Length: 118
Image 1 (cartoon, helix red, strand yellow):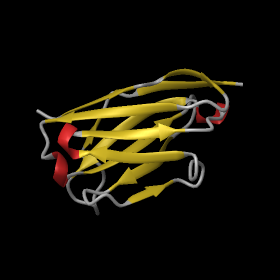
Image 2: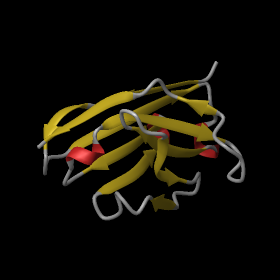
Image 3: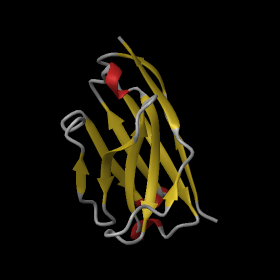
Image 4: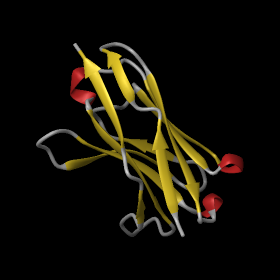
């Protein structure tokens, strides 16, 4: 049974930092591509960042230069370091996993709330 469990969300002031974690189980973690998405109130879910099984990374323009995605295969965990947070970063953040890079994500976590106050 695949499980993705996010943690690390919370309330932070604008300009602050948070680090999200996503612990995976039931997967061959070293073989999966991982991503972070978010959904703000009243908005569609949007892509934030991704990291391939080989460690290649990519970011949405809205977070480039502020967020960093990384992975620790020994811990089956992917991270999202978020710096210089803005109120518009407020959302529920979800991690996702897939085995094939060309397909949509197969597995999703339950999400963690990030709230940035102005």
